[in-house]
Image 1 (tube, one colour):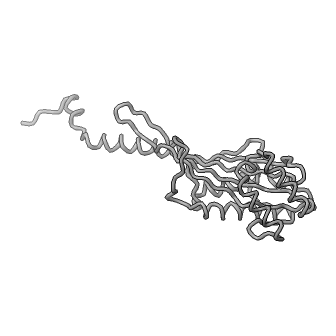
Image 2: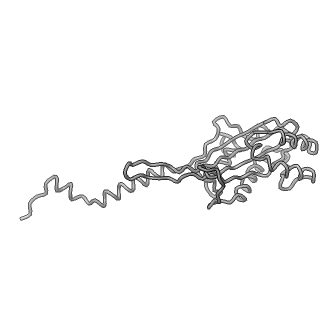
Image 3: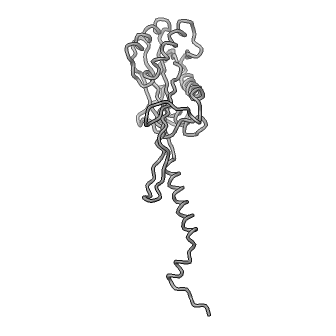
Length: 232
């Protein structure tokens, strides 16, 4: 004769593996939430077009791209997009923003004259600082020279810095969850050639290593040049 189950027997009869599976699923969902990435821009950011008065000639410097380890500052080789791919996409987004504002574009990739080409090459060494709205004396002198060969010009500098940080973790003993610390910063600045005065700047933060194929990367570029407005 089989005796009825007691309350304690009922608790013991619940398969342990099913509890473990449910717990694992919760952890995976929490990790996914912790690792979700959305770009964040300046809350008061204006679109690049707001600083482009007509007629204006925009000299687009070659984009700067850096890969750094967050903990040491040393360089690393990205397993995603290469620096060339990032530079190409950044240049394309900048060109579209300038053209949409109906400004005249001079791209340092295909400069309008030999003099401009020479100055573009020299300005490459300063592009990281310029994109962060830092115009030092050496760059200011080159900008002034550029104003003498390219009338009524402004310079647009752009930069992507991808920093590789520690990956996401889960401590099964304490329940502590940490998110991936990798991040990418997008910077751009527009300045007068004759004086170096900053006319416009913007920065966007993306909490992942920059990858061209990601939707969050495309949104980062939209925020960088379009500000907080709606997509065009």
